[in-house]
Image (tube, rainbow, N blue to C red):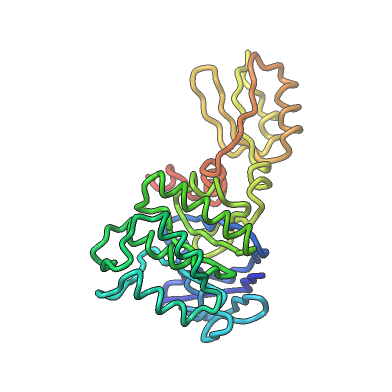
Length: 299
């Protein structure tokens, strides 16, 4: 299990993470989401042992990761801007990582070579951004780590390769019980693979839930009423947002779905439909609740 305990990280006067605590169960695909500058990349670097927290700790199976080779053997981290030496090739990286990771799998690497159109002897720095990410992923998946950390991994990949990456991630989780943490702004892609999400904002945790549970807690309702909804009806509901398009009302409401539906149907709507929420809509609703929305940004 991965446990984040009261983690604080500062860079000079700037606090990147403040008293952050949550845990990630083994075998999860965990989507780490948040506003720009919320601390997602910093957290991944702390988990991987690149950064040392100023307070608190990160433990992998009960071990701290910073300056701990036995814990780092279980982790592979692909940063948002993977770094390669000028003369690095996929072939040279294989020789390097085979020594570092006892879990290296030659058979898996050969299989991946048949999937990704990358010359293993070509210099990686001469490749496009998307091809560089593919090269890094080939290595990461061949290592077969217990924990794999991916920062904006879908950035620069075409739709076909994104689908391939999602398939390979799910295979890795199924075969090895690997825990995968993906930090991304591409919420549509995360929705396809993640079973848990963590939302951070200004260095603190806003929400950490099973993805289905997170969606169940917020509901979108489209309805038409003959008369305007009375104030006491709206006050009885935890309404996050109301939009109107002519007579049509679009409400975002927190709470129990059945109770919300019963309350609104008691007002005898001409038309009413409960609509499923996407992960992006959950993100926007949760961020609006902490004051991060377009209206506040534009003010």
